[in-house]
Image 1 (cartoon, rainbow, N blue to C red):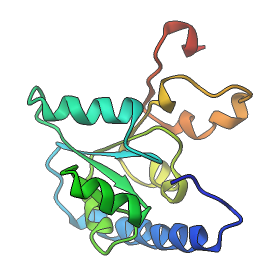
Image 2: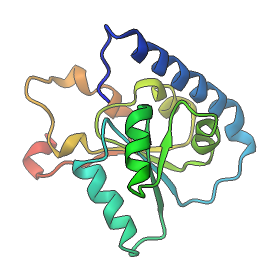
Image 3: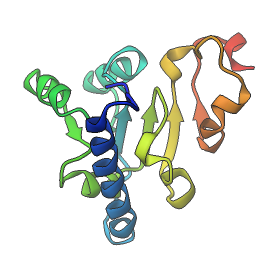
Length: 158
């Protein structure tokens, strides 16, 4: 779900997600992590996020990947397809975020913006593989807090 700043429902979803992030920050010191839990976060489970998810299902990794969305309709849709998915506005989300070891995003953090500074979660970004046209260095400030940004080509790295 792309955030529409003019849509009041999107502000409600962001607020609920933000409340769950705050609960995560309170829970995190008390929840045991197993070193295998990875969340994928983006508008949709497609592109590089989908490739990572499908590869994890191939059985070649010990990582446990799950897609995180704040869109209840999309969550229901992909859950019916058998995709491991979590709803960012649900009561389960703070517990999930408290257990996670890494988060891979493809389009920013939204309500999770405080997490890179306040937790030991490792963040990775795939930016749909190639950054969008018209962006400048200021648009990538968030990614400077990430462990790595994965790009499709060495030329896109600059």
